[in-house]
Image (cartoon, rainbow, N blue to C red):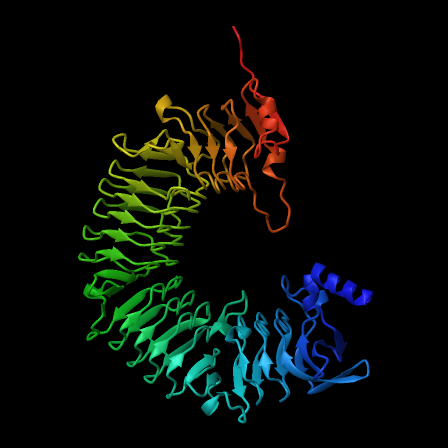
Length: 568
């Protein structure tokens, strides 16, 4: 009894042991799944740590037996376990017995040289993401006796028989003429692995009505696709990250979900066929526009925005190689992530007819300079966040709302940001060149600097009482910051990942309250970082040393010094 309790406690303390193999026979690892039914599953060699690196435990062609003996007992092999063959870069094929009934998530994922697979007759269920990132996969088949799946006509695909849904495809798939839908994640096998991308093309037949969300997502090998008349719906992220260069939308399409073509950075030509009652590509604009709402929902590197467009949709240009954007006078709204990850976009002028720029609209784009003209009233949280090359920004007097109270401003992660100009006539906000302050609450909602940031200059009545959540987050080149004597509170994550910060001068006599992880540094890939509190000098007013040494959020600093003042 004592031994049983000890084993149970060890299992709680060592959760990773869940994935440890129970035994190895003839070079294959197994876990026992039932001592009652004497069943087991194929698993990975836990000593190889397949989570992090390619391994060579399984090589060439692996033949899984129906039964295997261990410790005088015979077990039936009924499953391919989760991540069983994952990350084996010399594995080419696995031959499975008829006793297999299930295949675990990620079972064959990230095997760059894996070429062929046949699903046995008794397999009832598996995730198509079991075949993620297998760019060399060229042969897929299903045993003819399987009642749930088939590979009709030698199509090199796995099809759900009852629904006529293509569930798993590969680069040599030919979609049969009776297929009704392409499933979510159907072509994840084509996800690229550097050095293992073989481009392929595919035609969607007229029987297919639905391309589900992420149907081809991440399939970097997909170079070209032809959509036949008959397709009605294209799901969100359906082509995310593919290498297609041209897309023609049939007249039959009535629904294109947001972000369907995001991350298609090679896309150069977009056309909607005449006769489509929902979408158009007016005046050869190289874009997809929702006709009724005049919303541009998909753009590309060669798109121009025609007059009459009222809004630019969620993920419309995300990840594309556009270099210049001319926003016409008809546009009133730029939605979330509309220009996210547009790395070739260097300069942007947002005219005053645009009333709102939504959250993360230009997230991680390549812009170096942004001008927001008079008339714009609202800029959403993190609208320009992680624009790592952004150096200067100009904001108008018309701005009434920037970011979101309690969640931060619009420039987090803009490590090279040097200067922000805000029109002096702005009623709601004040900018001293180093910080953006909401006047009524005297809250710093954004701060920046590649060397020093002084938050306190300007009128005493405008000096900050509070540093908002995420205000300085990700400003990696900021070396020192001076906080005003009026400061009362620093919100959570305010200085998170300010990796170069070496001096904090806090002029408040009473230590401000400090929120959760206000000075947190996230772990780099090597797994270790010296906490900011152990390497940064905290300078405090004369006579306040002990107060800071005992104050929550400040007492963790190892180097606290009183400010030295020169007396006449």
